[in-house]
Image (cartoon, rainbow, N blue to C red; front, side, top):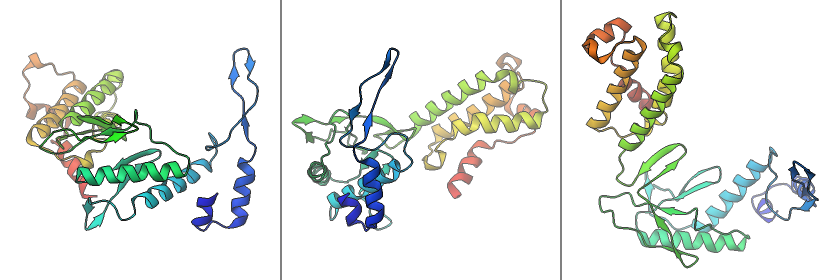
Length: 267
């Protein structure tokens, strides 16, 4: 409530929110019935439409208070402290000492508001050509250094490349194609099947493609996947010895997947 007051929320709205959360309790439903009622001392209500807003206000206030005047990572001349989505928080820094100071300040301010940073769920990753580990302690424990981790469904690697992410996306898209193979190889109109393919398969393969930095090997993987889709859709086997140009003529298409990625980046 103190945070809501400091950011300028009207007292009537604060009182309404306070009454909503006052003396709340919860029961757990089991096979043999419900457990006894247990009071909730803190936290946000599950399923309440107000909870995400309150959480975001609380999170934004804490990070702003903790990281004010810190940080050295700039984009377009502006210092970027964090990247946030829901309850996921990434802290960005160029120097190890700066990152250590930012984490220490986050822990300090978080404890002032009754929050703790979970060392088991906290990871470190250095994106650099020099891949020696970053040594930062949290609660007397070394924070784990990782070579890659998944953030918002995309794999981020410590070498800054997207080859692993692209291979993973292609594998997921091929699995989606195989699940609906009978649909894509049916007697439906060719144009309709191509639209279905691009809607249900390409959308999986190109998730987050606007952020990719493509190397020559990545472009080859994507173009190979594109031809794989057309060949499977037309039931063309590798022993048929049909060249790619002939396959494209049959489906009335040109190589288009890289152009689609460029168009997404432009937008």
